[in-house]
Length: 182
Image 1 (tube, rainbow, N blue to C red):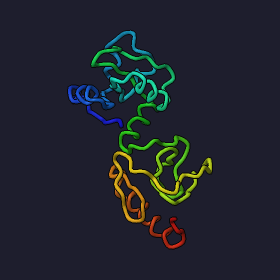
Image 2: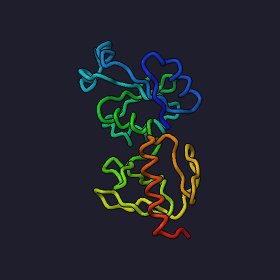
Image 3: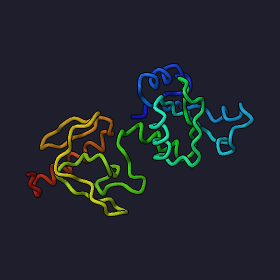
Image 4: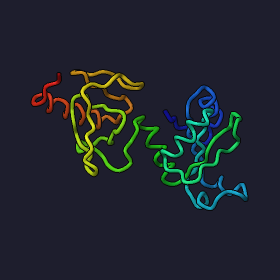
């Protein structure tokens, strides 16, 4: 799971990455002008970031999932091993850090939650993605990190916003009256 660190929290970000996590270190876009070899896509940005991770394979996989076109690992093999992010990949990383679910980048669920293609919150339900129509639910979900069980065999993430949790609980209550879970 990606965790966000602000510009002044560089040491905490490095410590988090060293302990096995992924640290998204946000910085002002002005830092892009310090090195003459900085790619042009970073210049003129309000915000840029380093994604620190000691696991090189996971770092590359995360970069691909976020939509990074050219993956260049800076300072490989060191504590400061990272990739640079800006634009849409950075926005996706921030969203993933706020909601530790694998997001389908294409759409949202009809009930207003992110479209989960590989982690299913809604046990026993089959809501569909508004765009692609793919079914989202499964019969039961095994408990995953960051999720807690709630009534009826469902799981909810405490990292969801309060209004998302309320909408999910309302949807669960509504569907419990019409759907049997077996």
